[in-house]
Length: 340
Ligand code: NAP
Image (cartoon, rainbow, N blue to C red):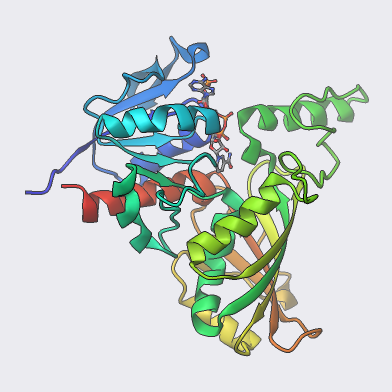
């Protein structure tokens, strides 16, 4: 008989994504039996809640995972590298939000609307990777287009919210904005430059090819998830927005896709919502996407400079669909199809 309730650990429960994972488990009525919150020494003594009941935060350690069925990790790359193998050894299936395991050939990289079948590969290492937030929303939107007309090339520029860097960056944008509006100097701690009233064409560090790590994640992860040799080039930009990443995406397809056809594809696409009525000034915006689980698509136009091209504007909540919701959706498929 199928097990009805599951023992869950959240590593990084005190962070921006961890907090959202707690909310997602409750909102989606995930069958949680026991729950464990794990974080660093800094958080020992903190009490968080689950469904109104207090849960103390424990120290993340190699012994944290006995009796845990699913370990949701959002504690950064080095913690994922160090602790996912111990969790998997103790019998927990890890779903990791960091970039540590994403390109490991023995670890599936999953977006449930795009490649849910890949979850079956979790047995190799006991780890499933959640993709980068910018990649998730782009592939959710591009999957129906690719299935219909085969995407050959993607040119993407992102406008990414500070919450993508975690709770310290949210605090920094708030503090800098307040200081500058009061004509006081703004302290710069998290980013290489001031983020308030600014745009930074650098997310993560630079690679020898001149691209940032974030840009190369979009290139490599898209190809792994879509299981297709798509040419991708990306420019990723941090903007002074709290929640919600936006993307300007130009695609070239094998088959011609008209705007009307694209509208029809998005009306029926899982996880997507078409928001496109430019005559009334209607298009996706981060202020509307924040707090939602869907990926919003609009400003759909034919690219008149090539034979088969489209321009799209794609917006989603980076903490929800870009991280926590996607991880919980994977956990839902795991318990329904793979764990007993
Ligand atoms: P965050 O707000 O800074 O939270 C980081 C979490 O990791 C906190 O719970 C922190 O615990 C914990 N942690 C840090 N060092 C630790 C250590 N030595 N031992 C145990 N726990 C430790 O960051 P976040 O935005 O939630 O991101 C978490 C992960 O998700 C990162 O790998 C990030 O790349 C990934 N991710 C984030 C987003 C996003 O939109 N934010 C999207 C996709 C993926 P303390 O509170 O005790 O320090």
